Image (cartoon, rainbow, N blue to C red; front, side, top):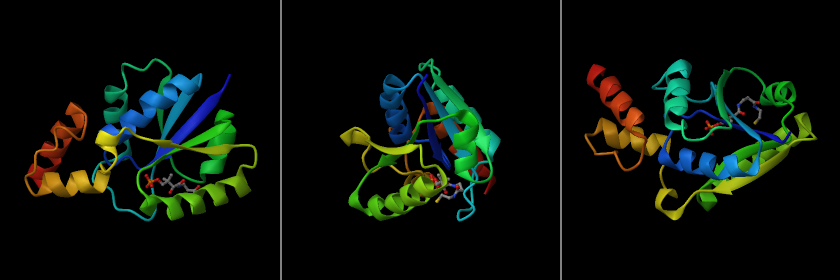
Length: 160
Ligand code: PNS
């Protein structure tokens, strides 16, 4: 069985992430989305909220599972017996950061290949941070995120 792990902050999940999951689910038997606490970022949504929003937005994909994870990604990859680590690539700006991560992950998980997936062109510039900023300033983000995320953003932002 070929198992891939797609790790990220997903704060919140966007249509770009869903696009990557639509593509990846066709390539692997199981795809495990790892919702990770990124120690370098302050999150708007809790890990559980992010997990719930991804589960709701991927109900159409039978081989996708979602789990929260804290710690070294290599341990999670080994625990899940993953052969691939999926990351989305948008523009050239992502490239250096992603290459660094792939390099570290290769050291800690030599048997796991990092595979970069490019989303469809309509989602190429969508980012969690862009969506949060736009929503905070009253922008309509309904074309950029799944409906449950749009609702979640509205609920969060009315509390700020
Ligand atoms: O969506 P993000 O924030 O770009 O995802 C980054 C993430 C969470 C995948 C990365 O920070 C990560 O893998 N964190 C787990 C800790 C780890 O293993 N770090 C070493 C690899 S650089």
